[in-house]
Length: 454
Image 1: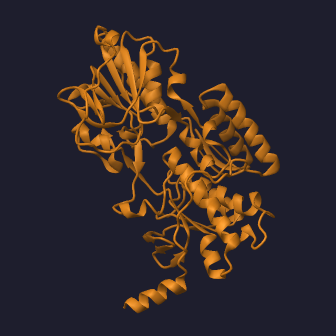
Image 2 (image 1 turned 45 degrees about the vertical axis):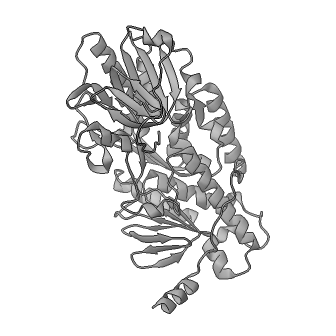
Image 3 (image 1 turned 180 degrees about the vertical axis):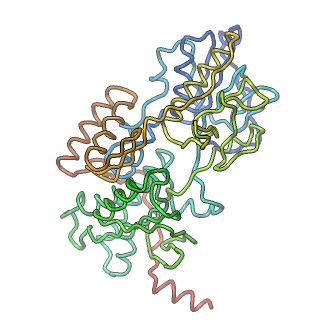
């Protein structure tokens, strides 16, 4: 749930008349992602009234967002209205609103247009892109945390191919057909594999003045390996799969500068029209309102019961919470952690309302999976490590099972089956505002300009 800071509300939010006289404790949940939604569902039978607030009116199935960005799925197939999900939960109200601040002393959530009081608060606002002190890179290199960003990436990618069709200068065309993905985690690996398949399979024979397979896909990772947290066997398998698709993988390489049409690495200047960011996230800015000193990645430290120290009626769940596993290591910011944490936060609120002690969070690791393309994935499920088609099939079944409603599951499965047979991506439409992009700057031109300036 992305928000922007505000200096204060414009008006006081007035609760419905029935709610204002309702003696039940009021639970406010910020965020309609995996954690917030699971917290709300956990409270469906509790003697409380629940208000879930989100800036958007839909729940986003974020693990499949990259498939929207690369045109495998349409937006409606990975998003579903929050009101529809909770329509049968009579103790829950959904508000479309933008939270700007949390007033812990007054027990109120401050919105852009009012205030909402609470007896219990569950903060599940997740994370946002982190550009490591370079906010100016955001406009050039979009991340992949929201539907808007996914559609921006889709526009940039397919518009680059369209512009290349009309470009006669070979060096400028190379810049248009160069795609740099920054960050070798799951998102970066998935994007790189999908872009390679788009250029070498999906768009084959569709352009007349150039071959889309000429596209250069470069995946840059600052660490020593891709997919941090996976075993050496799986990271090696992932890198080999990407390289077989034609992706150039650069590990141990940092991005030093990103400018329109150009990326500077440790040892190379690259003319690239399209740069995509998958290198890092940080806790949502609302976390700064919770009083505690945030830990690495902007996460908020919590007790083992997911409560905020000093405020037992405030819980933090999902990617924003700095919770740890059995081994004392920080839990990753993945959907399963958010789902289990949100469910526990909701249940702990219900326990407090009934005068019982909250329970500690014990994360059950169901494994991790990253896809590299059709038929290609790596997976760790308990002690089992698999790669290739088997891992991809497991990934597909798991993700379809967790989609919100039957229609989404059915349509996504049909879409995947069709794409699997035809290698076609039916959602590759360039929509929205036209991409306003500067002419790609070739290295020859850039160096000439640099020499003139010197």
